[in-house]
Length: 118
Image (cartoon, rainbow, N blue to C red; front, side, top):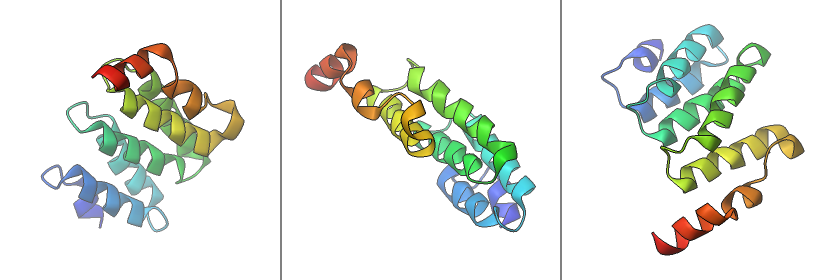
């Protein structure tokens, strides 16, 4: 699993799955693989968000780093609005009322305009 999680020739989705499987056995190796995925701007935002989510579930040592990346995704204007909203939903799920709610995010005027007229 470690080889798959760390192999850049393997798809990001497969690497995420391998890293998630490693979390209980080798949390440090899993965290390194997930960091590599979420910090790669060339990868699909979906995989990057999944990697950040995985990092938050490894333990307190890594949770803050994963949350920080998810917060960044909520405001990254290079992402599609639905991708920003998905990051908000993940923060809602992970932090509860401390995060900006998904409903607030997707009903902001620029997002409504984009979704209705794009």
